[in-house]
Image 1 (cartoon, helix red, strand yellow):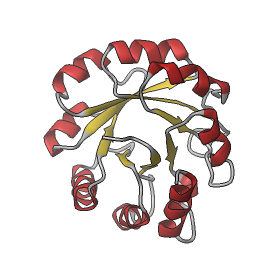
Image 2 (cartoon, rainbow, N blue to C red):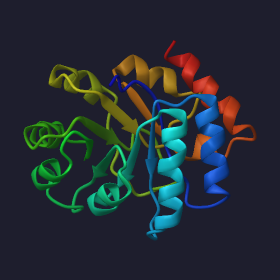
Image 3 (cartoon, helix red, strand yellow):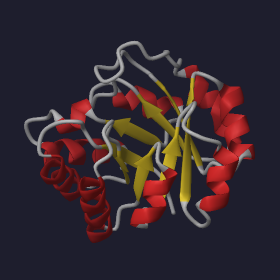
Image 4 (cartoon, rainbow, N blue to C red):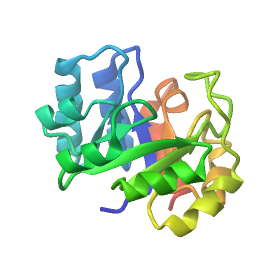
Length: 195
């Protein structure tokens, strides 16, 4: 499975199911279901959409839910559970890890069995305004790890080229995608950056 392109993360508000469909129609590489309040029905609908469009769906912070719904994997941040334990339960599925601004965290995540690592916030983020900032230089430093690297935080279609040039394989985006007037077209615009 080649993980490269737009990594859409579901927003907290709006018609999440409809807007996720539009993003999928525009062409995304990976989809993450992320909601502060657990909503099994919505998560199930998102997993179903991912299957329809043949795009892997990752469940944020919830290995149990990922297994229950037959999702394609889970993504864990600091304090969301033990990565090695999650790897043992998610056999044959994707496991992602948030590594913030720490190369050592990425190395530890890979030893625990992560398939990809995420760094950020790359830019100031409307979703997490107080998030630690990860320098673009970190992506080049992480390249020798040999796994896909995701960038998250404040990414827009305008600043995305510099993040890709720095070495990011995946651009994790919420606001700039789902707040766009035309979600489908915005996803296509991101796709062109990877062409």
